Length: 565
Image (cartoon, rainbow, N blue to C red):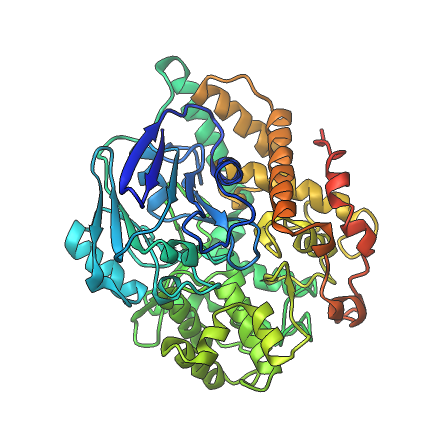
């Protein structure tokens, strides 16, 4: 079922939908069908799309994922941002494969969504609330057993770097659809929160004749995933700190360095003991049926909860990227982003650019906390700080700005991981690592070489798009896993598809997104790496040297990419 909400008419309409396609692919299809490329992203004509992954609500491991998309205020093109938490399971078990929201309300409101309980409630008393207080107010009003998508002051004020926050399994406002300014789209519609009721129905299962094989396949898939991701479960995805540091691809002081012994103080291996001694937890599941458990629960020195969003990209961009290597200095910055509703990656990149402009000092946590006060009080500087690294750099005349399509790069240096850099440059999503990271363990080319990086990046982009239809990308974008997903689709939806079919659907999704971006004015000429990466060497002496002509031919090359055996 697709639920269509028209805020102008305050109406809810349901439409039958029984196809197996969900997640990012369905999200992008609905955006391209319903959004005119020439509209302003904060126009009431923009459509906010919410799509759970195809297996959400079932026992498939790591399947409770949610794609949230719209035309992006940050990039000006199509955007999908992906989260876990409580919401995906509840959306799916309430019977909705997608929710589209168009129009705008006159008064700040909460939308309540259940199987039959659909309503809009005006809530002016929630205006200006930070996320953690907002969620507590909503629990008081609607009960604890709910899912929440909410916006903090950033989204409410339609700021380009604003997130939509979701609650984790413990109820914290710590899961964020962070990239692309989706919070601004929700805020522009005068929606403070969307509350999802508990439907009190069991998890989804296929019909009886397929059930035994489905359960067996899910269990085997879970066991294999746990085995392959054991290090991440033990040390969370902060285990990536030491790995990426060894690859000399870690952003340090706005990419001036790419490896440092200091940075290892932020690695999962090195913070596990002290974290757990305070009552925190490493290997925290962000959503139901997660077997990877890449997240953490962080407590301060007094044992008080700080955040459960303390993950690799956030920690590095707010940590080593700012010259901070003590997680007690980094966690308060992340907590502020949780609460105000800001993307940690974009905020870390923007704060680094602010340091370039002389408004903060690398290595000084107090100078960066001072920037959060500018944001909290919404001074003119604060508003610029929440408008993304690209705009901040233009306003302050800084050229060392790590963005593509106006979106900041995540925590991987494109000179050391050239395939990932190519994904930054060519993905329709902007500089987004979740669009297709290219690591040595999976790459068919030398990640530091300049040969075939475009082809490798595009292959990974297709594989990541395929996972985003069904499950979390941390399960692993491998051909074997795609084979298992095809088997599960056939059992669950009674289809007859192959991994090759899924691969081709995913390729077409990227083509569809690219065509939409072109109609928005984001042609292949925007596939450009920031200049300082092409002429300034990283630790081993590499520059990003993929020819611009190759980046601009990405959509042509995409047509010829096929799945590997």
